[in-house]
Length: 451
Image (cartoon, rainbow, N blue to C red; front, side):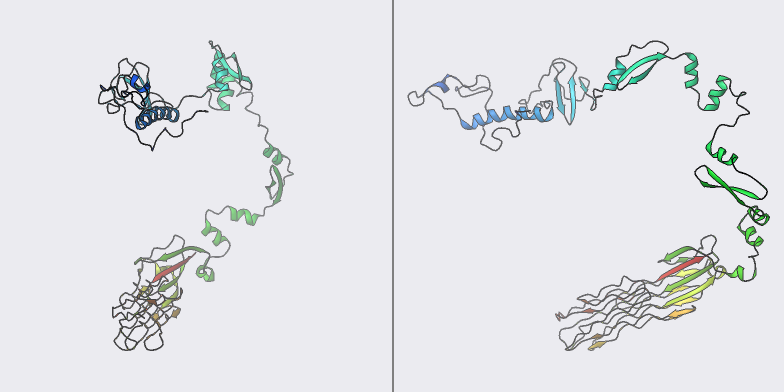
């Protein structure tokens, strides 16, 4: 399109609407520019000058209407507001665009608004011209004829008898063979197959097992009576019994890992089917970091870190673990200690909360204890808070799973590691406002399940 109007004329210029009529002889839509506009203003006082703003308005309306058609393909519907308050009358067959839909007027003198009985919405998609479809459309159809392609985008017809139609309607090879009466003739025949041909080519013998060595290639291996008997067992228990692996050491052996459960909320343990033993690792909740409130270096402006929860590790028989309650210790908050995590006779204590006192030094939270496991690992102590000329701020104690939260200006950092303590708060600005320590992280129970 070489004359596309990208921007309507005078889009941002001064414009004044041209009226439909003007009794004073000014430019109007009915008469246009009258005779007075052709007179010389220098010599004739009745001459009129062409108004720039009205000329802008005229060209803007014209180019805007062209732009709407060029960009939309179809002119927009003319509303009553567009037509000075009166409904516009469309002729039969007129095309308009409204709301993203193209409508065609079905009647003459159509003043209704689409959609409605007097309008028909044109389809959004029309089948594009296609050489293949054109070739099919050019055929002259007749009874008992079947169209087929005899070249690229060329088609012709062939006969299709009732027998051919019956065969096309069959659902499988067997049905076709039955229709053609070939089932009896082929009943004693094996269809040619590369896999069966490879099997037929083997030199078989006693106690031999055929196996594939590649695609449609086979060989034989020895198959002893011992292995044949094992292959005949109905289940894994019968195979283990046949191999002499039932009772004694074998019945107490820990096998493969079949499941891992990471438990962060109190619950009752339910084992994965097939579990025989569990390795349980439980950790108590971390203590909260200490707060601070200071106006000078002579007061507590550095809170202590919270202690970490202890950890128990236990190896349990299924009977000692299944359906046992698991209690997960909560992380401490507001200088409080973390909660204990318990399971199957093991108890992993929570870490102590970081100190918050009015003296110039505050003790770190105590480590969480651990009892009842084959390994009992106490948690790490929280770091002390210290005031004075040299600032020492309390780091949260570390648990088996990692380090605690660090100390922080105006607020301690909460721990994100299972069972680790929260960091203490410090206030080097001596605001006199209480600054809270970070929360300790909750405990956890990790259950490793073995067959």
